[in-house]
Length: 116
Length: 165
Image (tube, rainbow over all chains, first blue to last red; front, side):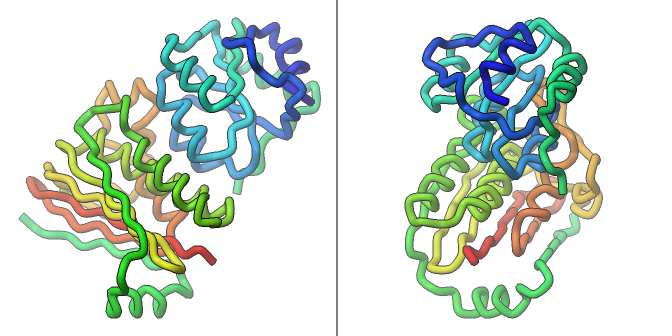
């Protein structure tokens, strides 16, 4: 599955234009707690979250995040979008809930990231 | 006021840690960052830069992640719970030693703070996605050695060591 497929499934919108939509997404993780994300993500992972502050982008400096989906119609502020753009980190917003996004992606074959 | 010393050393690393602390070798590269109280715009920069430095030095990706996650959790802790302090990353030929020294107000009970899920984070910190009570356990999980020295109404020192192989 790639980012284009995810954008279609979640009826999402990319938040800045220069995104490589062919980028492969091997697995996903969903959480609104940053420590959970740091503890559970050990491989390239798509992150689904309701957090939109700058620290969610900072987290991608620490671990391998292939893209972020902001759920429930949330959109980060412009300076946070710029932080993502500087890093070439794809960011998507969707009106669907975290639960619905997770269900849609899981049914389409996107596996959960491995948790040790 | 009871000064508490908490030590964790990963099994198999006891001898290396003992020798390193006894020998006190010369640091090869070091970085220092200021961390300010509740400054969540800057918090995390020190950890990013530390990770980038190690990456340039050719440290492998799993070690990079462990250093970055440990440093970031500690940096966020300092911004969330202390009145500010500094982060010092010291790189040696086979490991990194990162120290966090704040100006208080201290940890009343370190054993309790180490319990996964226990948190004293305020509403602001929780709204940002922190305060799961997993910061210290997450550092412990990712490092080879960890030391905390603190007391109520005192500065806190948190330090960890991670070997490159």
